[in-house]
Image 1 (cartoon, rainbow, N blue to C red):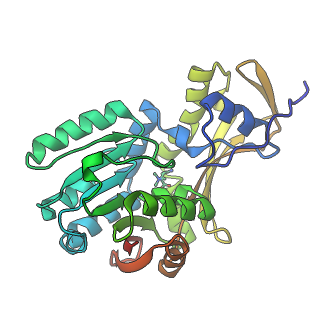
Image 2 (image 1 turned 30 degrees about the vertical axis):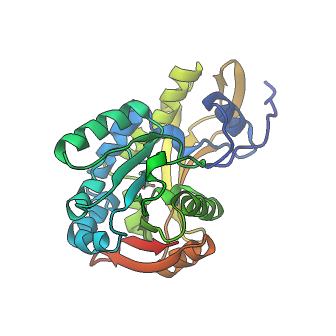
Length: 321
Ligand code: AVJ
């Protein structure tokens, strides 16, 4: 069957506003097939990611939490007094909970997330645990410009972007995103960012290809989601998980490898897979401390402080706009 030639592939992230279907059709129609990592997080995908964060091989989450636990008082002390604290892509509030006890005078905590339902329930729960805190959720895609509540316009701003989420963006898109955070927060603001660090390839490879196969399930769940939501017929046994650290590009790449020559139909559109052909599903960039500093500076942020764990696995940065 002929392979339909569709529009050029959408960027892995931060691309224009397109539907899931449009993104999948153009991604699979590209000469090198790709899908955006942002589509991993349906209900099952979010559960699988939570399970990943508890894996022995997956060090980033527990290491970042340990840094926030140990250095939370110092990190909090660097924020402007009476600030509105904006968390970009808040998801669960596990991380900000490590900072809030040290920030008794916050004007408000503003979690920003696309999932309105999740945002609402997390905000309610946080409000119960921190009854004196004003929680002002904003349902928005943080990769696009969005407005903060009007009455917070005059408050000093602080931003929080933990989890090395920035690593999912190509360095240029990452710099653009940091630049847009600077415009949202304004001059004089502070940004706290969690960034995973470059390290031994074996450690990185294991973190994205765990022995229990949870990351494999997370990767393959993208095909399950496409089957269900877009009426596709991916054979889950026909693809296998692949993850590796590319030392030249400084990034983890995740792929789904076709185990045979096969035809898959998505919303009536056929796509041919050669045996061994892959769908590139995720990039996770790792930085050195100076490398991240240079990126931040290019985006208009001055580097103020960095905190790392004793093994140098992960970093938390304070930046000033
Ligand atoms: C949520 C983007 C930080 O890159 O480590 C974990 C996602 N992918 N295992 C990461 C992920 C596979 C994670 N981030």
